[in-house]
Length: 381
Image (cartoon, rainbow, N blue to C red; front, side, top):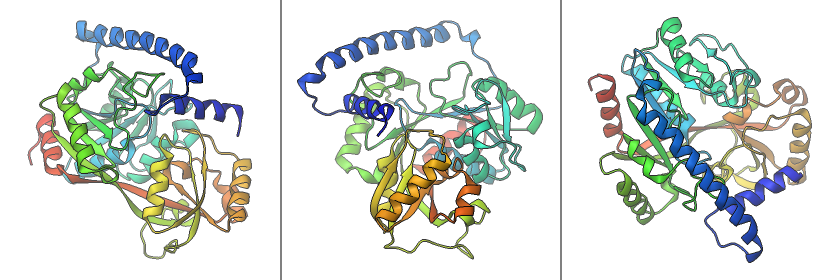
């Protein structure tokens, strides 16, 4: 394990809602002080937009934001894909706006997909944006930190009628018609502290801005735990409806079939249930992916975890092969990871790699969610 990985693991331990050793006291004190400064900065920045609404950009079409109040994965990408597909079925032309985190286009503005052609790779436009573009034929995907700029491009150049902002609860520069906030049921608010002492991106009282909540991974916690989460949400927001969602595996096919765009079960090489696998991921919450792998009926022989948004190299592929060979397994990864993997190297070496497709399913409150969205964009059911 590298020094960076060790530091990241230790920080994760300190930010978790678990007992800590007295030896951690000095570091925790420093992190608590930094959290106070971080909170002051967040509140001041937010208040600047509340006090001066003219600073917010306004676009000519409805804007819906998807986001969360914590750092880490809550299922925003599959939820954004779900909403985009649903809006298309309702007759709208949506466009997805993604920041393009750690990509070459992050500081500018670019079209990842015009709805017909994918124009950028993961390095140029970001892994999440490329995953959306591959998953949503017919839906434009744009990348760039300034969502007002990419939103204007989507409307003027691509004829978008509704804009979906991915991971934008804290993006106050652009006014929106509806804020949908995703809550990870397995770790809803961390230890209750702001970054870097905890995982909260902003104070809990800011949940009052939400127009709708979705509890993701709701099947991984008890009814009592979900009720406790809802009670906390009601403490800060008495009116926003709450839906529940689960991450559901859709398919598990060979990397070759996935790379060639064959996601349907017909003609694809499917991974046999009961197979021993090594789970490979670079996610904010790798444990959730690994739990899904086990839920599919596969035996988890080993796991390989990289930092979120890790750029995979040929050396990584060789290491993954070696670890899989040691425990007699095949490799299974996510679509988000697959878009970043060096495809030519994998195909040439015939690496035993499989891609597990995950989709979001709204298991409770789907009609309320759809009605809420239509009410905010001026549509009808």
